[in-house]
Image 1 (spheres, rainbow, N blue to C red):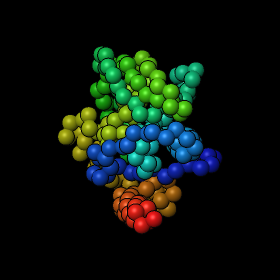
Image 2: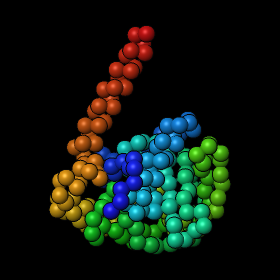
Image 3: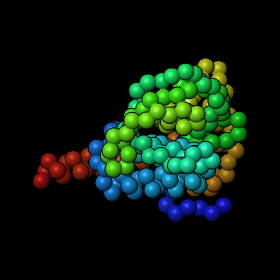
Image 4: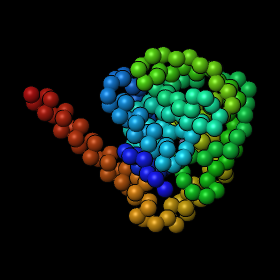
Length: 209
Ligand SMILES: [Zn+2]
């Protein structure tokens, strides 16, 4: 496997990621571009069709969609997205890069087509009508920004099957391989602690100065 430069490790699903809301993007500068580059590299590495920033531990309302075989314009960057209107119903099998492994997918009911609004990388507001796979991936990624996974749309029975399979597949993986590509729950906690501490330090020095 050829690894793209600058990929990020994916945060694995856990109860604390569940329900964690992302902040709106207000700054469309270099930091956003760097984040999107990193997200592209990560999605390419995993050959996925969509990725949201919280999946690499950045809790901002940014996602990318990549549908290489279906569309002329394969990449879509969506910032501060929202679904304005949903039309019809569609049930398609979904999985998620934060829930890797065998048998970790299920049929999810979503709107078949959606009218959406979002901002592009430059901060321009776009309004679009999407259908097919594009509509489904948009809804899946927009969910991530509200701390939701495809499992939120399943029955309790289906959810427990998915989480059971997830835990089993993680336990089976080589630790080196896991650490190279994924951020586990305990490490997520450590990163959060470090962020909190550095924010407190910045906060206190700002008031001190
Ligand atoms: Zn996902």
